[in-house]
Amino acid sequence: MIGNNKRITHLDGLRGILALVVFVYHFFYCLAPQFILGGTYNEVISKNYTLLKTIAYTPLNLFYNGGMAVNFFFVLSAYVLSYNYFSNNKLNPIRKNLLKRYFRLAIPVLASCVFIYLLHICNLFYKSPFPVIDVNKNWLNGLFPDKFDFLELIKYALVNVFFDDNASYNSVLWTMSIELTGSILVFVSLLATHKLKSKARVFVAIILIEFAVKKYYSVAFSSGLLICYLQHNNIIFKNLTANNYFKVLMLLCGLYFTSFPLLSYQNGLTYTIYAPIDFMQEHGFHKLAHIFGCSALMVVFINSQKLKSIFSIKPIQFFGKVSFSFYLLHLCLLLVFASRIYELLFPYLINSINISITFIISLSCILTVSFLFYRYVDFYAIKYASKISNFFFGESVSK
Image (cartoon, rainbow, N blue to C red; front, top):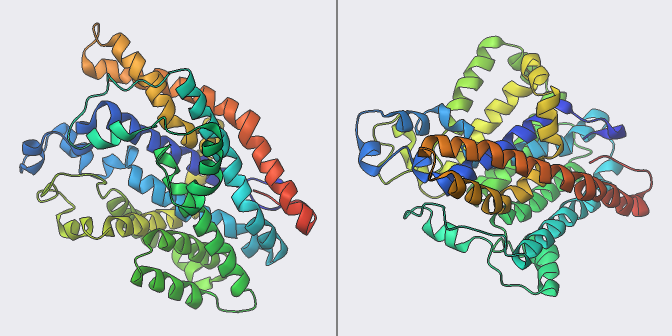
């Protein structure tokens, strides 16, 4: 959101689609992991392209590339969090949001952990139907351990998730500490550079320092901040983004780097279009590939009226509205709905049809629960977080 409670609708829609991509990734990682890997090992290292390999090792994988989606979340978060400041150059909303950010994240996180705790009490988690292979074995076995009493759960949700980088109870929460520290980085950067006329050099220097110390997720936030600054204040950047050839170049680069496979077999990229950047699988450089690609696509997105219109339609806006709730709950609900639906249909349908029907029904059920969570938890979390910041700084600000 931006000031005066006006939503940036196309960015809300983008956030919703990214949350859906994460869901698709986890769905297939649970039920059809070889779909993500592009087939068997021998099929992937072959020079020939099967249908699965074609999807997994081309930009078609963007429909389920979870690494891309998470890094795009971080770039997008920084852009949205700094948008209001670069629109009006006022510091007070930054101070408010700096205080507000923890509570805005922590309240839904706490509620989601309590929800998972109740699922444990009701014995609703069910993993048995999911196929287990070497790639997903440890991940599946470690999902949602029943290891906390209620007081420990509260401490975990409010402290450990954000300050100990602990996602052991709900694996999707690994992004929360990054989201909080990245948001603080954005706000502190804005406060520190407020009186500087040329902020771009400082933001670039921050990115280079983050790269040097291997804080690659921080690079994503600083990249989103830089893009927002240039979009608002740099004439050269505006002229470049008005050039269709430049936008096509950014689009092609973005599609190539964002679709860098999150998972692959050893030597699996040898006979793919990603062979020239195969080295990026090492040392966490795949994150940089995604961040560079996401930044390029972000530039294209914010300068395309057609894309803005598409992402502002009501169905996509619905995904945007419930995106945070959907992100927090989708994985635990996959182990409640998808596993049982898949097992129920297994004797009657071939696997591909079973997976398709399971996907549709599971998605519908999870969206319904996510909407209720948004309506009765996340909606009020935004309000209460605002009240806390208003107590110290006065008049309300936006999300």
